[in-house]
Figure (cartoon, rainbow, N blue to C red):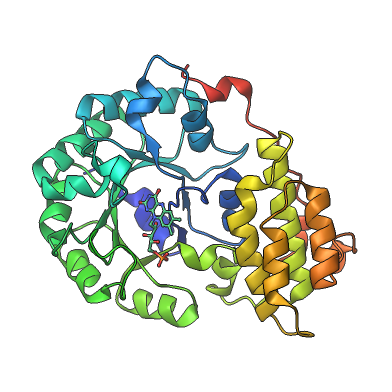
Length: 354
Ligand SMILES: Cc1cc2nc3c(=O)[nH]c(=O)nc-3n(C[C@H](O)[C@H](O)[C@H](O)COP(=O)(O)O)c2cc1C
C-alpha cells in the first residue's frame, strides 16, 4: 500500500500517455514528456519472455528507457507471480524504471491464451497474487491497468483486490474486453471504481480534447490518453492550455519524431515501425488551417516510407512542406524541442538481462 505519492503527486500535473503496443516506444514517450505528459507507460512486455534464458532483445528494447527518462513506467503482462517478480527484479537491475504497471486489459488472443491481460479479470485472486509478487520484488511503486471486465462490469471487485495487494494507482479503460473499442468508454463506471478505492484512479477511453479532459478532472479522475495522442503528441500541451500547432509546427514535431525514431532503432528501414504514427500526423496536417491538401495522397505516401529521405520527399511533394526550414523561429513550446539533442540508441548492454 506504500508509494502512492509517486502517482498522486504527478496525476494532477497533466494527462498520462497510455501504454500502446506498437506506439508507446521510447521516441514517442520522449515527445509526450516534452509536451507535458505527467508520465508515460511503455508498450506491454511479456514477463515470461524477459525471464527466459533465450535472449529477448525485442522485450528488452521495449522496456528500455531513453537516456534521461526520469518517469519511465514499464508495463508487464504476466500470469504467474514468480515470473512477474523475476521480471521486475531483472528490469530494476537493467533499467531502473520509476514504476511498474500490470496489464489486465489486453484482449488479444495470443495474450489471453496464456492467462494474461484481460483473462486476469476473471480471477481477481490470481490477479492480486501477480500484483503482490511485483510489489514485493520492486523498490518502486506498482500500478495496474484494467478494463471493466471480460463481458460485464466487475471492475470494483478487481480494483479492490489489486489495491489490497499493494497497487499504488489504477488506470481503468471504461470498456469490457468483449467490447474491444466499440461504443463509448463508460466514465460513470470509472468514477464508481475511484469512489471504491483509496488510490489515484486514472480513466482511459475516448479523451481526445480539452473538454473530455476537463470533464474527467472535474469528476476527480486522472486521465490517460492513448489514440488521441497518436500523430498529435502536442495534445498534452493543449490539455494544459497551449494553442493548437500550425502546419509548420506539426512538420517540425513529426520530423523530430522521425529523426529520434531513426536514431533509436537504426537499420536500413528505420521508419517502417513509425508508419502508424505518420498516417496520423498526415491527418493532423490535413486538418490544420491552410490550403487544402490531397489528404489521401499524403497518407498513402507517408505509409510507404522507409527512411528519412523518403519522408522528406513525401512531405515536400504531397504537403508542400519543407523539413529544412529554420525551426528555431517557431513559437514555444515547439522551439525548445528543436534545440534538444537527438535521442541516442539504447546501450547494447540494455538489450539483454543483466
Ligand atoms: C494500438 C493500441 C495498442 C494498445 N496497447 C495497449 C497495451 O500494450 N497495454 C494496455 O494496457 N493497453 C493498451 N491499449 C489500450 C489503451 O491504453 C487505452 O486504454 C485504449 O486505447 C482506450 O483509450 P483511448 O480511447 O484514449 O485510445 C492499446 C490501445 C491501442 C489503440
